[in-house]
Length: 553
Image (cartoon, rainbow, N blue to C red; front, side):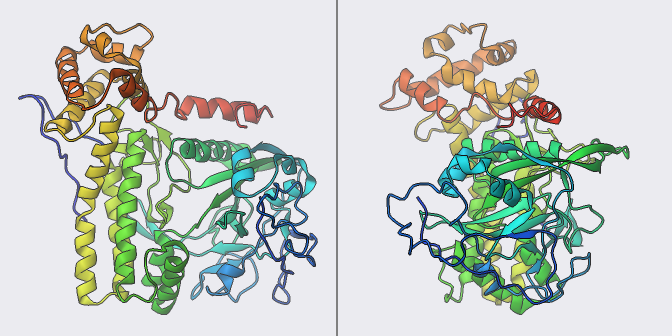
């Protein structure tokens, strides 16, 4: 049974109820010819580039190389994955149970109607993919990111995984509407996996149509880039294309479906492996394959772990536990609720992936749930840290068949340390949000007291901390809150607000080698003025539905 994380802070004043705290450039690419298994049929066509010339031969690998102005010598490859990890021998693309493999070959299904580029991330194109922004205006680019064509030398893949959904084992899940179209190695030597979402059916589509709609795609594109800007580890979004193909969806989970337009997001991440990637192998007793996949993941993404070390799986687990605790605390620090924290949506690299019914909390409320289908409020924002521990426990269960008794004991102790790791990170983040330096007795109480006032007054989470960042100490001393600081004005109506301010100022005065201007400067760097609130995302969606992408770019 997974232990729960309890509220760690003492109440500041007798009789003060404890609020639930948030548990709360281009490198040398040898261009590879595409060699697919005989008889492999797919819908997407090959995008034939100059496949007989290497970038190195063209002198393209100078240190001062410019961004690519076309896709002519820009290459993707699946070789790094399929050379080590087995691929489903069944080549036909139909829904089925798949065993004894990591991937199935599956080609994207192009849209039938015209496709237009709705948005592109200049930062992703230039800093990750080594492409000049002008490339996004070419037909080759549109065909690539819509799934109409694939780059010669790459084999599109759909990943097989399972997972616990809302606490219940769901069996085989997998990439039901996503295609990994290849890995790109950029001029910094970083490997990035490119994945299309909404690009058609795969063997893992179950009862789905393999499509994504414009509404959800706009939200994913915006939130991926917004989270990156907030400093939260996340997958990235390179582009968004929209078609006129009709896709039917139930927006409110009430049984009523409406006609929407199909769209595709090009997502990039260092890896798309998730807890469910390992769970399905352990569940079906495919232990040799589990070991192969784990060793691959460790070798590629966990350089501090030696793949020859007998305790490598314990060391791997320790890192995932630590980084997951950090990610949960970071989510809480910006008021982000993922909405669907199933094990198949939890990255082994501890980055935020699979943006669905997410939401940024507006009024502070530990019971905030952005997912209207989460009737039991399992994934409410105040329970996310507990869910993180639940998911890590499921990861440990998947690892256990490969561990000896001593290693199992070590791994269990590591998991037991998750609450301390989480609270340590949570405390540090919220102390920074309040501009506190050093360690002082009562810091936890000060944080809890403020959150209590915010909950009672339903104050805006983001703006409360931002406005505290902009208030001078003298304004606080006089309780002189300018009218434009509306979030603090709301809290100031609570009778205990002066008591909190008094203790906050006393704590600020204990900061050593600090000044009020430095404190405010420090706080503004960690307290954003803007997050992607639901009304902002919905405004962008409504405009996009009218082909106005001004709020999506």
